[in-house]
Amino acid sequence: MTSVIRQWGMVLLEIVVPVAGYYVLRAFGMDVLLALALCALPTVLFVLYRAIRLRKVDTFAIFVLTIFAVSVGVSFVTGSPRFMLAKAGWFTGAIGAAFLVSLLFTRPLAFTLARSMLARSPWAETLRATEWNDLWPRHRWFRRAWRVATVLWGVGLLADAAGRVLMAYALPVDAVPALGTALYGVTFVAVQVMQHLYFRRVGLWRRLAEKPVHT
Image (cartoon, rainbow, N blue to C red; front, side, top):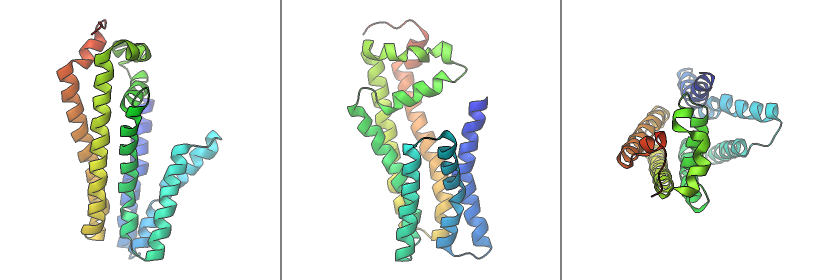
């Protein structure tokens, strides 16, 4: 329950608060570029707070802060808010690329993230998430399933990124933050549905609930 609350808190802080903040600032007549910069401050401050509290260098935090700093800097230099609006596309695209690049390593990103989430879920025992490290080298069907899932997420996020950049430069500026937030939901649901249908077709969860057999 605590992990679910924490996840929803992150969604609220990283997605809902910046978008709502942008429209509030615009309602008070603030300039578009300044509103875009200020509405992202709560997320930036939280990233810094978490890094200081944990007392360690967080690669993800550095990445987030770098993207924010570069986009703000370039936007103010050029005087165009569209470059800053497009930063969500760069961010999403980098994550999508990371999924695809992870296929070159021992275990792809979709497998690593799913194992981590299931280990903290109520279904951990049923799905035997703690045994996934043993399942990976022994079962080809298991490795194939998570490699396909990794491709789905990688391609889906890259398509999402392309859509964000296109919206940033083609649509009215004030429409982009709201539409960009809606796109997060569309992309997540679409990829989740495709992943679920694929897992169902290959019987991934059924096989995990049973004693795995060599194939």
